[in-house]
Structures are given as structure tokens and as C-alpha cells.
Amino acid sequence: MFEMDENVIDRARGYEVLAEIFLKEPSTEGMEGLKAWTDSGSTEKLLELKAILEKIQNEDSELMNLTQEYYDLFFVPVSGRFIPPFESTIRGAKREKGKRIKYGAHWGMQAHQLAALYEKVGFDPGTLEIFEPLKETKIPDHLGLELLFIAYLCRLEDKAAKSGQEITGLRQLQNRMLNDHLLGWLPQFTGELVKLETSGFYSYFAILALELCQEESKSLNETF
Image (cartoon, rainbow, N blue to C red; front, side):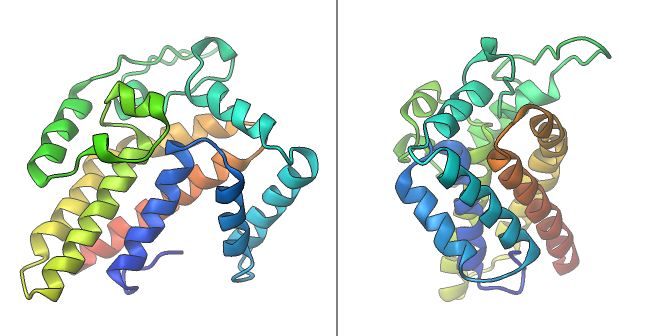
């Protein structure tokens, strides 16, 4: 949906849209923005999202159920359908057939790597307007933050290109984020989320994020 030959700012916005789904509670304003997006075309993906949004509008117009699902999936370990959207917890999980998944601890190796990388590049999650409990945890390997970091790199690339600076290093860093981080755990996360969710809303965007990351990795690899 977001191709490498598009404007780099369009690529950044694509990552930002996806990141916001996981970094903020559902809102009427956000849903209206998504509806406007579905009205912009008639691709299979957009039609699928349109059907999900229409069902939510018909059955959950106040977004109470979707908001509860956001909490249950990503914040409440005792909800019975909890799946932490953090790289370290998914990579460090213990999975045994017939048993509940035992997720890994926060602040694993990947989280420490990202904290150092964010600081080096100047990406500060503490300045973001996101769900306050997420901001307070200050855990850097949240799905939304990893997506937003690539968006940040895309915007740096845009500035560098406009000023005539080299952009290869920024694209290499984007590729590193995709291959060393997101594509190393997003497939597992998405597969498990699909089994837990009821509305289809978060699964849709997790799958879309995975497809985007796969497409972007392939395209970036071809530029080196």
C-alpha cells in the first residue's frame, strides 16, 4: 500500500498511521480519519477496513467495546486475551503446545538496543502525544514506537535529500530496523493477535504493518 517510489513523506505518514493505532486509545476523531481513508479508494484492503469500521459503527458507536478490547489485548495480563506489543516480550516468550504462552520480560536485549539507537539518532518517545500509561513505562520496543521510529528516519531522509546530503545511511538504518527488529517478531505477534481479537480492528492493522514492513524491506534491499 505504501511503495518505495512514493514520496518519502508519504512513507513516513504510512508508518505514523499504523503506529497511532497501537499507541493511542480509539477515538471518534481517529475513526473518522480512517473512514475518510477508506472513502479514498476501492482496493480490497480498503474495502476490508470499511466493513470493519461499519460493523463497529453499527454495534459499538461509542467505541466502548473497542476501547475495552484495546485495554484487554495490550494492558491487562489477566484479561484472558492479553498479548504484549513489545519486541522483547514476544521474542522471549515460552510456547508449549496446549499451554498458555508465558511472555518474556520487558527490557530485554532488543529494548536496550533500541533505547541506545533512539538516543543516538535523537528520537525521543517522551515528547510524543500517546496513551499516557505507555509514555510512563518508557519501554522503547513497543510496536508503535518501532514503527514511529522508522517514520522519524523517513522524515530525516527527506530533510537530508532536500539539503543535498547523503541519504544512504538513513536508508540502511531503516532497513536495519525492519530486518533486525520488526520483521523478527511482528509475524509472531500478528499470528497470535489474530487468534485473540474479536473485532478484527487491531488484527487488520497488525497485518497491514507486517505487509508494509515486508514490502519496504524488499524495496530497501534493492536500493543498496
